[in-house]
Image: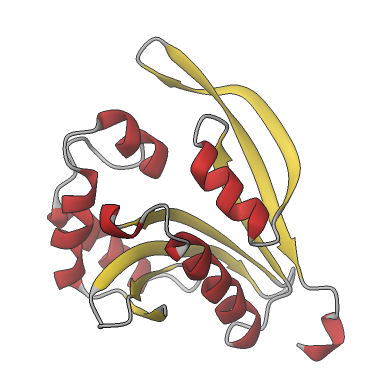
Length: 173
């Protein structure tokens, strides 16, 4: 069972632990928007920056025992377009491959609809992150665009899938 709550600065150490020394996984998670290796202070600084904005905030996912087990950001919250973008989604290594990521994404989409009152959630995923891509598809996201070779990592060029989840019954918002 997944529970969501607002990010707390003490969550940052745990999120950093999940990255470890895998620079490629780090880039898949951050798209180069954080420095490598990831420091808890950088996540906390981003959190406080988001607190000064009206359209972005961090969330933490807890497992059934209340342990920090996932992290993501909502940003680009737009009430006129009834939309929010979800990003920087990461799951603890112990929970990967067990459906926990899908539970986080589904809870986040429900939160976006039920609490934020939006009918569209978007996200982007690199084409070489097959596990995340399949997670989002199985959570109900659809590909809206494929952007080829838009990100460079060392000697590789990665494409990106832009995806969205649309609530069909917009009147219930």
